[in-house]
Length: 222
Image (cartoon, rainbow, N blue to C red; front, side, top):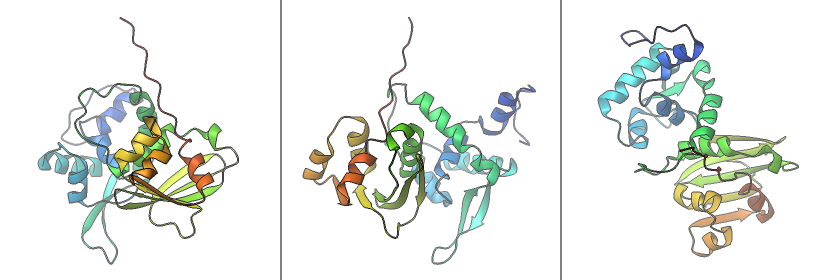
């Protein structure tokens, strides 16, 4: 990137880090995986980032061809940012980093996941082996944001939007879904206190929530 320090190393890893190795850069990319966002939405979903730093990262990533400004269609209005095809090529990189990082502890964590971060996390830990024989579309409403989750041919696709004829529906918060998926809370208990609401085929819901096994902590040697 122009005006940015380089490692000066011909290795592809070093050259990639010249583009997305600055603090916050990959988290900006993560927040755009599900679709365009306004500056204010990015700022709200990246707690701790200063406004000037976000502006700088957006300029740098735009110059690098990772994202681009886009006008939102009606009824929305104003400018937003979306990933370019080259930026979308980073999605499997995010998943690989997520799998590696999910084995780490939570020391120093001060914020909850954004909806977009949660959706990326689902794709990151999705176990294709557990999805054998499941072909279903689910409507997810997470912290008020509508998402569509499609499981087909042992693959998972998540996008922003509303499903037309979903087999099942799950509505909850990121925090409550994390409790069910990765912290051992039963779906029945979460439904009983109203923190998770489900509709449609319960058999599909039961299978869906088992597609995302909790990561195994990394072993560290002393």
